[in-house]
Amino acid sequence: MSAEAAIPARSAIPAPLLILAAACLWGLLGIFGKGVQAEGVAPLEVAFWRALLGGALYALHALLTRSRLPRGRDLWITAAFGIAGVSIFYGTYQLAVRAGGASLASVLLYTAPAFVALLGWAFLKEKPGGREWLAIAGTLLGITLISLGGGQGVNVTVPALAFGLTAGFTYSLYYLYGKAFFHRYSTPALLGVALPVGALGLLPFVAPAGFAAKSASAWGGLAGIAVLSTYLAYLLYSAGLRRLNATRASVIASVEPVVAAGLAALLFGERLAALALLGAALVIGAALLLSVEKRVNIKVPARGR
Image (cartoon, rainbow, N blue to C red):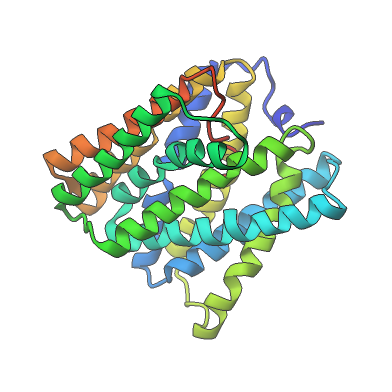
């Protein structure tokens, strides 16, 4: 039984709705994170519990489906990816939420496709064409406008931008790793290894300060991040992708930062200014431009966000 078989291919739920549901769950990442942080849990501890609990769910899934686990060199590469693609990615995303707000963090994550284009050029000899360079320029312009625009409840500071862009860059590493491994192993098998390693990588930054005492609502938020925004979102996305082409799926999934911004405005009073909204639209538009490019496959696999 494969990971994708957890949701039947012939589900009564239309494929676009599965993709939309996954995007909405990913859009909750910053919302859950900001809520848990407001309960006194540090950003890196939030990232730690996401990696640990999400990794446990993936590992259990891999065990129940008897998925083949990476071994030897593949295991060491997966462990290294756990540090870069989980410890650093999960940690900087939550730090970006604290420093700049949930909506800003979500938008900056969409710089990942531009990083993918550059990484593909540097390591895979996938030379960017005119469309790729246009998207990269649009991403840079978008970040500039966001920096200049700011907004209510949105702190566009150097740390916020640095953490958000680092999250976007480390998320883009899923492309390089995924291109080599996602067709050889099931995703639960890979993330069942990478996420626990990522949790171990975060532990030295969490343990010295001690784990925060958590209320029931804080544990609920952490469970929401691990179960809904990490584990279930992948299952829904992968099930929808089986019946929908990747281009349409990428376009539908772009609702993620819209969901994040809308909920951040409703719950936390975060509102990007008009100039920043234009910048956000450029960043998301650049990501979509790269997603619909078929000549060079530079899409980031949305498998472990």
